[in-house]
Amino acid sequence: MKGQAIDYLPEELAWIEAHKDWPRKTLHAGFCARFRRTDVSVDALKQLCLRKGWKTGRTGCFPKGNEPMNKGKKMPFNANSARTQFKKGDRPHTWRGAGHERIDAKDGYVIMIVDETNPWTGAPTRPVHKHRWLWEKKHGPIPKGMVLKCLSGDKTNCDPSNWELIPQAMMPRLSGRWGIAYDDAPDELKPTLMATAKLEYAAREAKKRAKS
Image (cartoon, rainbow, N blue to C red):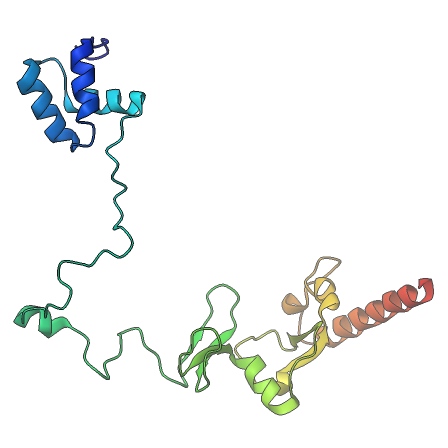
């Protein structure tokens, strides 16, 4: 009965241990036929072997040096399979060529595919932030510790004139952490907020230099 302990005779245990390398269903069938047991299920026999540490010796992995059964054999032609196989020159439906653009749903920046080798995957194209790519084409690489800030608040306007290079440490003050958020402010107030953030940053850096 379920939940009730099963008693095994010594000779039964000895037989199970001697045949522990058998697949469990085969072991169960052989055990029941030999000892005429009807109260032992496959799962019960599995649990017994587990408690006793009687393993089959199989890991489920191919041993090192094992050759697959189909090695050297050519796959037979199948019209239905061939119809859906990729052919040389085919591209997946998700492929987007150079010049394709999309809006990043997370932060609102424009992601553009450019005709440059992807340094991580080796692909002939790679995604970039359009505003940064255009800015660097005009002004050169962005120095370490600096970031580009959108001046108008419209991140889809990727013209380099709409972006200003500022220290990354200024971003918290422009985010509204200590006042009005720059992006949410009226256009006429944005220059004042930027100038204030720059002044506070310069004062803070001056204090650091004085202490050092």
